[in-house]
Image (cartoon, rainbow, N blue to C red; front, side, top):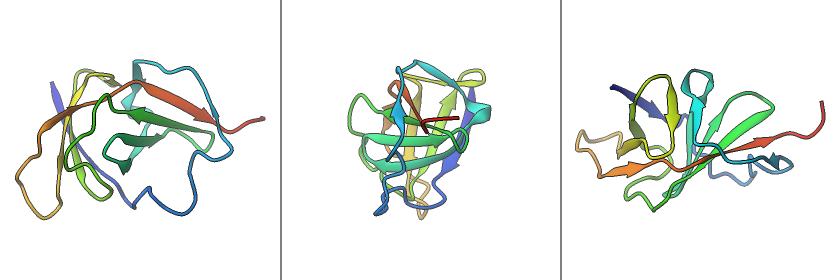
Length: 116
């Protein structure tokens, strides 16, 4: 087991929807963690990971995660090199070391820019 710490660089909830104009593909259970940027936390049920300029992965959690909001840190339990649905994580405020409850990732849906 590997534990990873990641934090949102900037709030994902802005006036511009990062998925606007993108086409959703079929959801998958796992994605290669080494190719992902982020996470960008949208709300307590939605996390975005940028793979490239063309692709953004949206993860819809199976249940709301208490304490998950923009600017929180994620402590993710990574098994191998991929993030998968049902992998556990904890949301932590930047100002405290007290961890939040365990939450689970959902399926990953790719959103791609059309064309090229």
